[in-house]
Length: 463
Image (cartoon, rainbow, N blue to C red):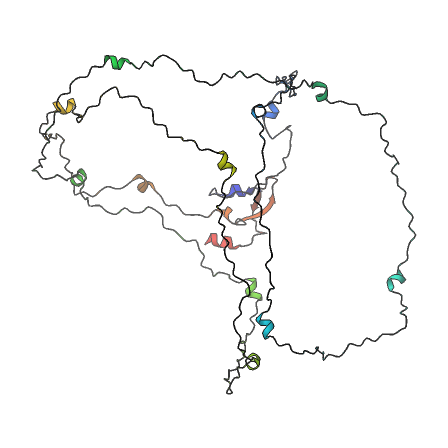
């Protein structure tokens, strides 16, 4: 009996089996079925790995002494820094007299006699007895203490014994480094001093010696050309307007086949497990409790408070401050605003240096520049003559015959019946699931008369 896979049943090319990414490979008679290169590649003998020419990464210490001198150490000159004198603070002197600490609260407050608060709650009575409580809990009665012996350590007793001899291993730095002291380095930098020449500066050039000034002629002024408009009308006819003519034709017919809906005339079995087992329960309306209507009180509301009734208004004068006014203290001596910066720093008169310019050797012309070129001087304008076109007239060829718009696609196209791919169903119609493959292929066999059951997918396909 032949078996077919989903990949073989598919007729639209969109369905395939879900392949297992970690499938096991079955090895047969071949040594390795994964690649052909591993089978046919001959292994050569006597081949050794080439030696690396790369030098080893080893640190090479510098043999010369290290000079720890820098330009900052050689050029730095320490100066004596004195502390800036501080300004003496004035001594505080308390003012004579006493401070009036009286307030309006102390004057207006009337103390009242207050009795302690007596609680109305009775005292809690605790019923106690002098008899000793002799009880044994269940934990002490049930728990029996076992005799536990201490576990001996299996770790050997090796106390630390410090060495008697002195540690005398020297490092490579101590062996290789030889201290030779600081050696001042001699500077070979030439002094940056400008060398002045006693000879006068020679400012004569070949342009000054060979240049001969010539007199300029008068500038030629060209008269302006007057604009003359064209008397002929503007031809705005384009080739598209001239050649395009609307031809009578029919609308193109669509060769697309009509979409046929694949459906069945049998009624749809819309029964579900929820509809079969659901029982409708009678539901009554929720009882809403009526709210109590608000009744406006008829009696007058007393808005007086204890503060309004018990408050006694006193005639009190405003509080006068006993603190004297702080008058600004002015000193007749002038302000000493001199600092060490102002005393030591003397501003120098530094006027702005003027720009050094060479004297003009060529005298500039006083008149206007003549920008007349040879093209402007010799150009003679002529009247433009229109060119005659020898192009033949594109007269449209009209005919009364209808347009032949038939194509090879319209003549040779044959509509075909649209069939559904059997691999699109969960279980293809006419087939029964057999087993799986190691690679994830699902194999189906043809349905026999013994296990033939009509499925909804077959109903749709037969319709």
